[in-house]
Length: 104
Image (cartoon, rainbow, N blue to C red):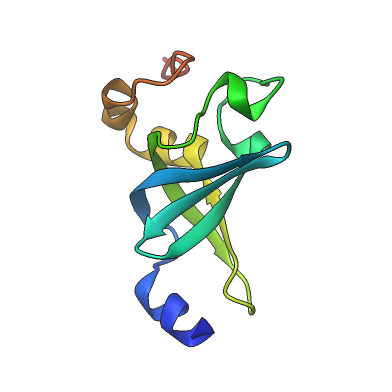
């Protein structure tokens, strides 16, 4: 099963996923059916946020980039990397904070 996840999910690829669960340390986002990855609080936005729930709620649709898949099949995700790579996606998201401005 771990090998199946590694074959289906591509490292450095951007996915649009659904927030399945909110925790104190981040959110679990379903990037492909029945496969969640961890979006750590530090990877949600360019600015510091106090609580994950200040930005995300369960059911939100967010763009995330797969930044790591470990040997156990666990995925680390980054929303801020996805928005940096694809700034147009930020305009489509309707989250509680405004996306950071693009560098000039």
